[in-house]
Image 1 (cartoon, one colour):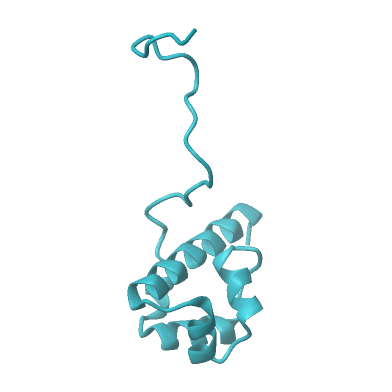
Image 2: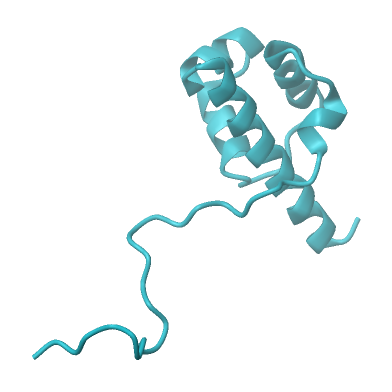
Length: 98
């Protein structure tokens, strides 16, 4: 599999696991316990740091109560960046500051 496709799948899995976990109102520790996986493994999956093993993937799907394809659907939104938004370039509609 091509590296770009692997990255895309990791990012989709990460975004979907986070979304489903938050929908359930669970912390990472709670999901890790329910899925019977190490919390650091879950953090790695949610950060898209590595490709999850098949057993981890199946455990997450079962714990979340979703099908495997739900976890691999392409992500709808890009991961939010931390920090405040910055203007790119000057906006002529903003007043000039001294």
